[in-house]
Length: 317
Ligand code: TXA
Ligand code: MG
Image (tube, rainbow, N blue to C red; front, side, top):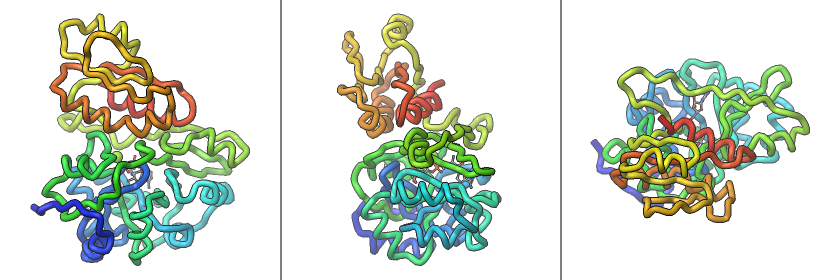
């Protein structure tokens, strides 16, 4: 057990990481649970602290493109274009790994998922280290990803020595994961950079092929990103009638629903980026209200809206 501390001292964070300890770090997407990506023992601690299945690989974080190049075999042309357009930013590249990256970090895969996060404090930290950081989202496996230091504390208190506090994550939804195969660019996870943005830079269509995380074993948490309170998606007005008599919470895109429910509107102006940045906090807040059910609805299926809908779908049961 640790006495988990929250602070803004990236030098302290660096010293702990140097010693093989874990530190939660802020990024523009969600907070990550970081350890030395080149140190198998540190990486093993990450799986442990999160209670994450060992076959679900981790994303490696670096400070810049020069560092990134050290840990992959080569960059494709399309990858270089994307790096130029979106670095630093919420895009993760799936590339053949160099021998420096131990197998445990990629769960045995020859490919490493690697990205340059866009957060000033974490970029300073990464530049100060002589190793990259493996970091999955800093939540216990199965729960909603954290977008503040407090969220990390709520889930991992006692399991790690330090949480580097960089304020609220601005994007609020995990990075997009892209891979490259035979000249094709494939989106494996929808996230902070939309497939439309990628297509614009590459000047060609991308393929969307969502690879879901490790299948859930019976008895474990039911699904990824899930709240404890059941969440259903549909036409909220109809759902309100269907669940009469229940303690209802509402998670809507831009509309307000009458009836005195505990309600969170993601973006009154109907802006997808704002909705994304508030989604996970809203899910956590609703989950703490002792409700029977959370009623929600899909947002427009364009741009980052696709990633929001993906997370809502995964949270629903
Ligand atoms: O925005 C983000 O990407 C955040 C921040 C902390 O950077 N990280 C994050 O990590 O969302 P995590 O572990 O929660 O999700 C990583 C996803 C998982 O679905 C994992 O299966 C996939 O990336 N992944 C990681 N390495 C991979 C690899 N080598 N091959 C295929 N998929 C991989
Ligand atoms: Mg995660």
